Length: 247
Image (cartoon, rainbow, N blue to C red):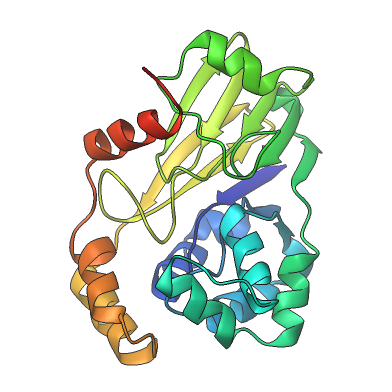
């Protein structure tokens, strides 16, 4: 089985469309979404496109998906884009997000038992990074039997071993940190290969389309922060290390 892993789309429809147009994604046996699908500038259209793919897609819930459901139920979000997105989703879309599982497990040939989660196996918002210590990884993976663990959440692509467990983060389709483009991963169960991929995007074209089609009143500022400019990997790792409570 060949699995395309897409994480943290965050309602950026042009980036999602570009990834889905990749031949290897089109040929994959399964597309796994590791959470945070809709919280962003084009939530309705993003969910509808993914739903149209039917059983080719395995969905997971992320912390931003959970927040959209909570906001739709009356909670106030500190993130204006999430507050806005939750108000745009239809009832059927909210119900879809509310019913998403927190984990998926697949047997992937040479990759073995493969666990897919959003952040870590024990939390949908916990921070774990490529340079986290083996002791920290041991805590996060305690009690798990998977040979391969696929995570998202931090928008930072990496592949590493953590005491013989292969850990993969595909990065973010819609809100990348480090370098611009739509990041995703391809898992090949036959060969055991894991490939980190980045689909090139024209930032100007993506930004112009989002401004024209989103409807979010803060879209120009959003585009400036997440499309026209991209947080560096150094900045992101420094901020996330603090969130990991690292001294």
